[in-house]
Image: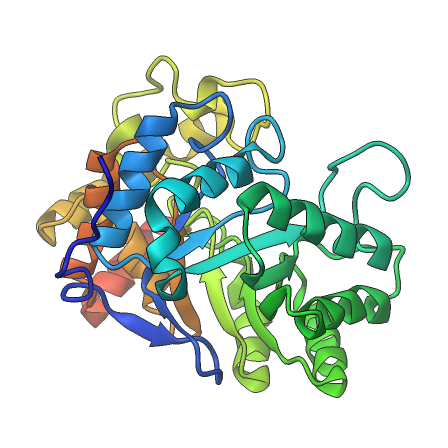
Amino acid sequence: MSYLASETRYDSMTYKRTGSSGLKLPLISLGFWYNFGGLDSFENGRAMARRAFDLGVTHFDLANNYGPPPGSAEETLGQLMKKDFHPYRDELIISTKAGYDMWPGPYGEWGSRKYMLASLDQSLKRMGLEYVDIFYSHRPDPETPMEETMSALDTAVRQGKALYVGISSYSPEQTQEAAQILRQLGTPCLIHQPSYNMFDRWVENGLLDVLDQEGIGAIVFSPLAQGQLTDRYLNGIPQGARATKTERVWLTKEDVNRNLGKIRKLNALAQKRGQKLSQMALAWVLRKPQVTSALIGASSVAQLDDNLAALNNPAFSADELNQIEAILKE
């Protein structure tokens, strides 16, 4: 059955300007890092993408290596564009990245011009797109001159293969350097994608200030700390949870056990606010003016709906913020 987007799709979402640019993003964006790969159910991913767009989520975030296997999330997006979203291309912001290992040999990862531009061509082919809206350097390359990586991003825009460029996981100093080079090239840095959540607050040590100075927006990934800031682990680690997996380990059992006391107290506070813990955690990262959007993953339509409901109660009293600080400092 062909997909017709909801006519009310723009009624409930809030959109925020990205830094000092003209581009607005939804406060919550959908990431394809997990659950959209070749090993996942296509129809489940399709249902989530459709539901997200029907609720005003106009931004789908990808990278060349998302899957597994690497590249397969982009192939899924390609199928979704063909089957469902082709008529809505101009209503969508689609981003991808290059930086991690993608193919054998010396040109298959990091930040060389050779790798960045070859990777973008491969990404466009997998997605069946003429251009992406945002193309990122996925991580800083310690061995390639920053000028070379930024020049590749600038070239992607000049070739018409990307409308905007961004960087991910760059330190405050690297961000400043990248922003200055891009400005000189005439392709400003639009956006920075760092990790940020209640347990991972590195962006507060200088990065948010740099983003302010440079007029760059932030879209934060892992706002739920890989699922820790949800009700999933309140009673210990369930079977099949991310903390039990051995491949691509971003979350260990030790992490969960170490934070469990805090998670339970935060959950009690969220309940007082009439929210789930995950909803409070999303509202908490969005409280920073520099944060344009929070990037969520989802494994089901119900989970997606749950996360989007964070926007029903986004404000915090000073007292609530103080309580959160006290719990996190324990």
